Image (cartoon, rainbow, N blue to C red; front, side):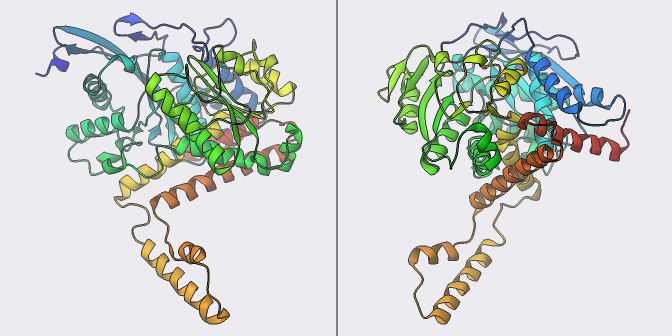
Length: 510
């Protein structure tokens, strides 16, 4: 018997209150200077805030009696506590996997490793996944998982043992499966952890031909897909492009033109924030004038070198002492600085009714899950701020996860069958242009015409098309019902319509 399995575990199916436990101790909720811990404030909880937003959208729809309650409730909540042995001592870890909706299968949602993880947060995030998948036409239900742990306190080998043990517990109860429940990376996890989970599933289910589809966000060499690691940040970029193409929305925001030279503040330079900032600055020529992190912020009105700030953070663990721009110790205050676009890309509940009146951004683009509370949402909208909702803007991760899942169950990489055919067709077109016009096509254009799309090209094309289509659907809702004047309500209306239709067509209405 391995050290990890020396004790019996204590799994429970629960629907009551959960409490985050990390290494046998209650988790800390102390606030950092730039990224505050989610509020257990006297207003609305995170889950209540999500529910209120859903109810607001539902008020514009006619639904069968009881169906909204079914849509709102989580289908199943699984809590597990398990021990892992380190030397002569054991540490007990507590984790959750929540399945919010199975109107489509598999249910989809990341696994988060963080000290703040608890049942309530996991349920709220699972609910957001249901609506997010519906909005962007990804045929999955919503789920979420989390382990109450500070991963920075453990070595890679220790994290591997913890992750594999957690995976075994979830697999044993059917909470990881390519056909039922498919996790992905989230805060504190990445391709490495997904590869470990996939390996555990494959060892426990060796006859499952689709075993590699049990998780997404894996390394490309382990069944992953090109572009998945950057996907959420790339989706933020594509989503903001759609906003800036919408002349009516730009008029409401008081902005005009493209993203070029727009002043952007990023809160959180993790995977999502880094890639969003990098793409917006390098490809759209936007100015990243501030980056807020847990230990403060760096600010420069001329624009920051995102790669340089990231490199400093990897060495120093934060932005303190960063030679780029000016260091500001009170990072939370920088959220309130003048800018065109504010991108909260860290934790939920960063903009509340306390600081919302001081937010000066024309557009708040939710790259994180639930960074604006329901109370703050109302305050910002009354002041004319455009809020780009999380269930739309950060959907890039689940969209490309869907592509990876398709790749895994089809057992072939995208572009393998057609790329050379496309290249041949492009070469024929170049030859035809030469013969007809008697003029030489430039080398740059020849290369573009002759080059067939690879997997990354196809993934980016699919993500761009998905973000564009979802925005058009939200825009259409606002045009058809003049009572709906904000993107969040429009997004939830689009998602609810699709979920309601699914229940009705399945004959599952209460």
